[in-house]
Amino acid sequence: MLGDELSRHETELTSSAEFSPCCGPDVDALNNVEYVDTLIHRGQRLLGKFGLTSNEDECNEWSKEVLGYLCREAKEDSLDLRFLYIPTAMYALNPQSSNTPGKQRQRARADGKKRRDQISNLLNQLFHGVDAAESAKINVCAITLDLDDGSLKQPVGFRNPGFIPEDDKIALCEWNPHLIYVEGGNTFWLQHCIEKGHYSTLIKEACTGPNGSVYCGKSAGAIVAGKSMETATWKGWDDPSVVPGRESYDQWIGCPGFGFVSDESFFPHYSSEWLDLVKEKTASGPLSETTTCLHEDNVCCVVGELRERFVLGSNFDVESC
Image (cartoon, rainbow, N blue to C red; front, side):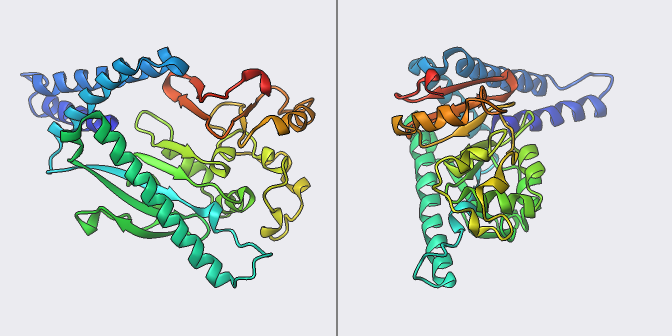
């Protein structure tokens, strides 16, 4: 959201210099660019500096200042937070289910909407915790994208229907979501849909660069964020037979993910019962030194511009992988 403001002020600054070359750039526009740029770098330094032991008071102070600034600068009565929810992994059909494919899809869509609403409520709570008065101006604009067919469904929070993205490409490339949340479920189905719809480059480009979206991947969404999604074959939890022509685990060996963290791959839902399996799988080969194991309460955070990453959570143990 700060990136949006920085881009806007940079445009104002450029325009002021072009329309008044003799007088030079507008001083207010220049001050705004410098102030927002300072806020962004302060936030990055807080993340990079504190990582696992963040200074809560300093982070809260920065968050409150940012929220106050964004709300003051909002052109409308509210400030829009654009949220793109991707539940594709949980839409995979279960061949063992007694329900028809139609009923399974209906149930999955209902569950996906419920989970998306939970995330939207959590976002509102986080903003409320920073500044209750200012948070009332926050408006979460959410829409669901299914990578299986590229459909967009269940838009909420849009004051102007004309602002609702018309298709999947616009949602990723032009709508510029602040948050892209990739839900958990069947990793193989998710990866299949990413490949089928040629979404890998689109999602990577949407989540990188100075104004990139925040990528949040849960379970399957975390696995495909890594260099390789081969870790999905280790536990045997997900059924690869949902993808025609790639029904065995061996057919997914070496399959690349988004590679958001250089050569690092992710193994979520880790616990001590998987220790021997992880040692066996990482004893040799390309994943031997680049696999991060994540317990249920772990989150791997990446500050892309600073090229830093750290893991939050009470159970994280670097030596476990």
